[in-house]
Image (tube, rainbow, N blue to C red; front, side, top):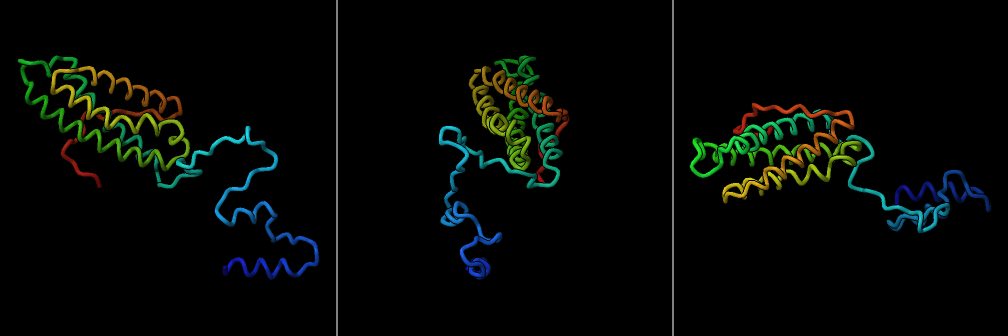
Length: 192
């Protein structure tokens, strides 16, 4: 109401002519919260706008934080889940199986947390958001489900999670932000 008063005063100064400060008729229709239609576009040409991705960075150093979190997550996945899986550590009767499952469980939780933090950073950067947000969001739950399957003897989830991770790494590298895996993460650290 306070902002509307100066516009009305300025608009009332001219007789019949529209002032440069008054909004056009289509803009005044948006006061009720609806988005006015662009008269130059037909309804068939209108594409939905992705409101979830920002127009500019909303977090300082979003790409740097994304690269750090995904590097830790992917390194933990490969060190504590994928490589032991390839070595047969999770098979019944294998040497170091229980230790492997303990470290694998911690790694799955660690990956899930780091991916959640990386997802927040991705959603704060317009370039990353459009390219990586959807596949990155699936990784945390995929790794946890893969570990749960692994406990029952089904290793199919590990290879699926590895494919998803490779896809995100490839997309990130293609966009000029290669992810460097940290294969020595501290699984017991708490986020700052």
